[in-house]
Length: 138
Figure 1 (cartoon, rainbow, N blue to C red):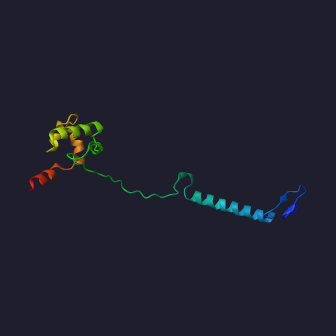
Figure 2 (figure 1 turned 60 degrees about the horizontal axis):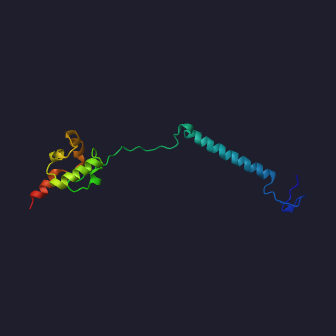
Figure 3 (figure 1 turned 90 degrees about the vertical axis):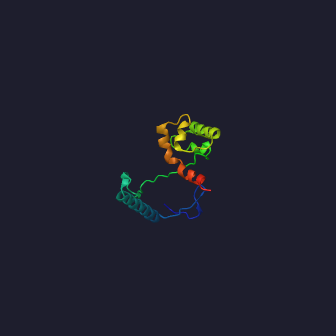
């Protein structure tokens, strides 16, 4: 095969060969070698088992929050465990009609809050003792 560097062939179309056969063979050999090395690295790192990345596992953490049942709107109360949208609206309605809650036991007067529900939601409610302390001090 004769190389035409920037010359026209018999059909009048300019053809240009960028690499000679020896250069093409060398490039192909380098590409094959690179792929073989990448495959070897992949296999040594775990291959299909997926052990390629070592992830450090931290102990799980839980975030706790507390809500003041006497000032929180129903949207905030609905985020408390065991309190949904409907029960949160009932709590706000009861609070509006009867005033602030003085003790946790008073929450059981709200329709839908029984002893079990009250026990489950108390950790998320701000302590009533702190509120009583603030009211007692002049």
